Image (spheres, helix red, strand yellow):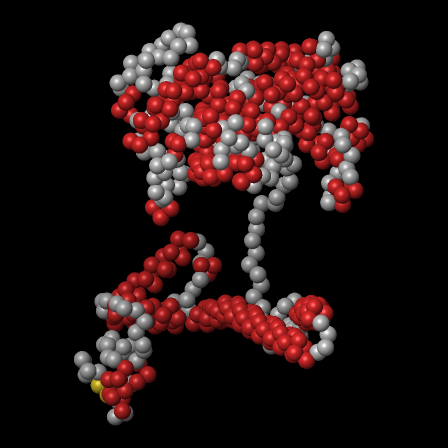
Length: 309
Length: 290
């Protein structure tokens, strides 16, 4: 399973007629293609850019957001864009909706006004508008997540492994020294597709083993003795294999370059401006109820990216 | 509607007809008695007629499914009953059918009697249950009404008392308000106590009303396969997790934040958090066996 391939299904989502006019242009370098719609790699650039923005937003959040909330928000964002396209739902609204929903789900109690109060570049009126948009998209987000709102992040498994190390593995004198590096590994892993490909306990174990090998400590005996894998060579080798794959995933991650980001963003804005008025935008999950329909929002495109952070 | 001649006459005309004692049916001139008339229940007169006939037939043909040695014979019997009913309803071969009925009646007189008794007993049971339900509902409704009345009255009295005091007494208004609040609280506790003190004395300890007739039908026996307990086995794809109770003995709890008094008061122990962390760490650790 290659991460990129998850997003192939998104192309077909936009207006049916337009795609026939677009010849599939495949370029090797990361240049913006001439077609009207975003290519796979361009969408990837957009996705990574907005994911970084979301992480920065969560890290600058007041009061301090716990790590699990941030992890949940990132996972929601990733899962949402597995089945939808950035051309259909603009990431800047979805990322705020993901953060908002994850605060609720993870019981990190923040009122909605407090939440939009963290959007420092906006006036209070602007914050109100953003809040309204978040509330509109919330139901859609939940629906696209298939109502699976509980996300198992690797933070608690990491705590559990540390506890286990301290209890059953006295050879390692100070497991606490591994914590910082493991944490960094986990934050990096959250920005990759590792959460979609490996169970959280395996990610945590990789984090700890990685941190131990960086410190020069060997943890082979932990795996063989404490996890009772002495006889089971096959499982052990499989585990090492998956850990290697995870590390490659992390190494492959890089932040997109600003010029690429800007180019792709311009394209995205153009697409949204063109197709939002003509296409049937189903941003509310309950639009079928006629008595709940509100007037079409004309002022939606007014606030731009620079208004955030 | 007349049972005998199957003709339909409205109530007023029935009255008029029988003012003179006995009368003749308007349509077919058969001499009729008033007792033969019944109120129509169904819209379609044929349906009503059939229902009447069925009731009469079933009074005679009242065997039950356990009276027959096999399902086939019971079904045959039911078919015969239906034939009789349909013959009488559609006026086919009425004479013969009536003869059949009388013959059957003569043959099975005892059985019919026995079954009649059984039927009435079951009916009684059902009626009892209905009665109980109704009584319960009535009681509850009355109680609620009374409660509301009482509370309203108490509140009104309280308010009145406060107003009077404010008018006449020399104490400052704040003190009066405080006194009033205390009195209101006392009143509420009183009402609560009253609610609990009311216990109906007309029930036996099993809940049966003292004046009620109880039918003594035995409850139906249900035989089923005996339940065998199988403990739940969850596949966690990881190393085994120690039990919650063993965690402290194994030394895990030394590495978890200890529970503060506020936490223990709420029922939290550090073993809970530790167990959850270990479970999360171990589940899914091993790759799937393909």
